[in-house]
Image (cartoon, rainbow over all chains, first blue to last red; front, top):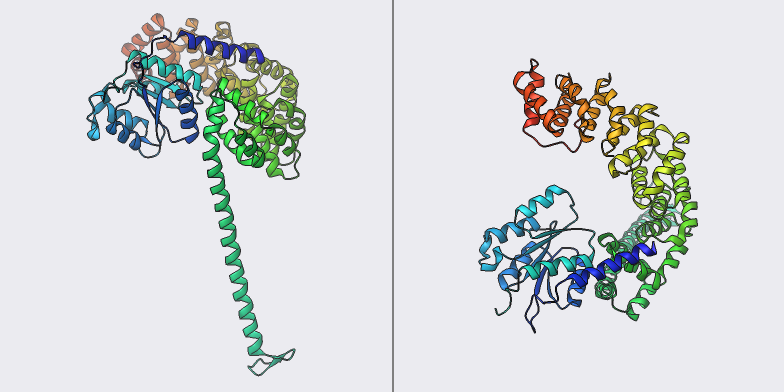
Length: 164
Length: 367
């Protein structure tokens, strides 16, 4: 058991080392992540992992709040749960990709979206990927792995939120 | 005696007695209302306190999980309100995995709550014991093994199954034997709970699961054996072909045999196809239907001729599974299917073939 855990930690450390040293956000600025999840435990834990590594995190408790934040200011990445009261993750993705409901931000159609979900079925994964999600992370979540996923997509889509 | 306002009881007039009863009833109602309101306020205060504690602890727990130090306030708070702290950490444990999950378990240990939980397992209240065992099931406390082994024999079902689930999460081979014996007795009355515990056993110790299943099988009830086979099929446990073949050829029950037939389809064991083939022509249509699906999953091209015949079976599920398997068998299977769709005399066969040509391979057998 101990060796198994050790190997997990070692892999995670090694994976950290694989992330390009170049910061996707220019010096002195922080990448902004919008985290939409109705579970306060997930929000607090994920936020703490992302902030530890210098990212700025804004929390939203449901889809409507997330869209309101996206109208108010730009973000570099959206982390969204699929099952939420009110407007769910599918609704947020749909609104973003079709610019519905007045989300007229030019970046909203290009904003990388990482979906978090406890619905692990391939059909859900296929559906959100077809709707334009950049990645799909299954709950229970490994915050270290999630952090690496976020960094990967931030590197692929360099910061657009800065200078606004 | 006829009552009138002037009658007297123990020296009191009837009017006085009636008045006293009314006052008494009024006071009783008033006291009841006050008690309910008090209880309501008490629970509200409890919920409010819990919400306040959660809001205060969440960032401190998150900070610890992200590699920070243990905040003294968190440690003190956890010891002062252990139930609330375990409520929070048990909830968090359900949404976490990987090294962070292990760190959460460490947090419970360093706050001294593992020993608190272990002590609670010895409580006289079945409710407390069941709750503690449920927390153990999430937090995987290896030191509570002996206590859990005793508790699975509790006469309270909630306690017995919560303890069984907690033990299943940390099960070694000996624990599996104990659990198999316990579950075998309870399968008929509590099939769903038994299934839950068995799945946890197969996930926590897949290497020993099959060994113990082989060993305990002859002593277990047919219902339990069927459940074990079902778990093997669902969890896609590998290296268990011999167990499945044994159930197939010397079944403990009809249900177990069908489940073994289906589970073999998940094993990727091409050798097993020869055992499955004989069921393609079995009298029981359920067996024909599942066998038709299984030979497709195993990629057995020697079954093509029989599958082609099954396209005209009287049962639609057999026809459809046969057609889907033919489509999944590639070249010769697709050829057989195309030919059947065009030329088969039987309209059922033509329909099944045409249907399968328009869909992808089935992941579950149609029954």
